[in-house]
Length: 154
Image (tube, rainbow, N blue to C red; front, side):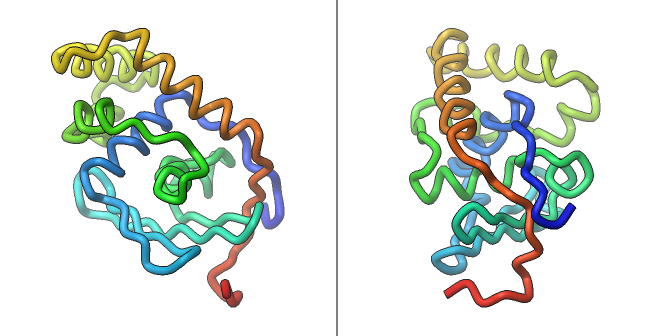
């Protein structure tokens, strides 16, 4: 997988990443290094970004070959992917792992997230607009998986 271009993520990963940012689960450790804590708080994902080369040890990135939510969250913090404070705050307390495991469908999870956002006055169309902005920004990038853990990032 080293050097392989990562695929586009499922749409829901943009919302999961935004939620992580606004829940305070993303820590910038250096200019190109981040730590993202899982929604349950039991895992910490390491994210490294150097140009188009990225590394993250989350399941979506490692095993499924797409841009995982920890990478998207790091790109939001870095200003590469759009941020949305209002939406992020509205969905910041979602228990993503529990929801994903219980519903077993990203489409159903997205419906739940939209319902939660609507409870905060955010219409489903606004959620869709954010996801489209995120996906458009991601589609403009060519992110390649590289194990940057042994390289100098500076």
